[in-house]
Image (cartoon, rainbow, N blue to C red; front, side, top):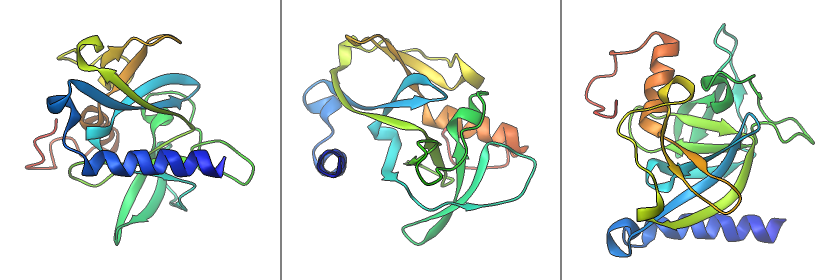
Length: 183
C-alpha cells in the first residue's frame, strides 16, 4: 500500500514538472475519485496538490460541508467535504480506521480551498478526444462538466471552479470574491 501511495504521489508530483500534456501529446490527466459512493474524475490541471490523511482542525458551525481548516504551504485553508457540497450525506473527516474523507485535493486558483473525498482510485491519462466536453455544468449543484468514458464505466468530470462557486453560494459569499475569474 505504501509503495502504491508513493508511486501515485510521484506520478502526481511529476505531472506538474512535465510540459502540459494536453497540448504536447493530446492527453488529459485526471484523478479517478469516489465521492459519496459515486465515481468521478477531476482534472489535474485544476489541482495544486493531493494529500492523504492530512490533519483537519474541525470548526463549529451550521454548514455541514465545511469540515474545518488545514495548513498547506504555510497557509490556513478551509476544507470542504465534496460529498456534502454535492448534496450527498457528509462523509466527515477521516477517523482512525475509517475511509471517510481521507483525501484532500488543494484546488488550483484563488481563493484557496481544499476539497475532501473518500477514495482515490488512481491516475488516468486519456486521449483528449475521448472526453465529452460540456460548456455548462450539470449534476450536483452544476459542478460537473464533461464525461470521460472508461472500460469500467463513464465518470463525470468535477469542475473545480464550479465547485468553488457552489461553495461560495452555500456560504453566502457568491459575488464577493472579486478578481478570481473562475466562475
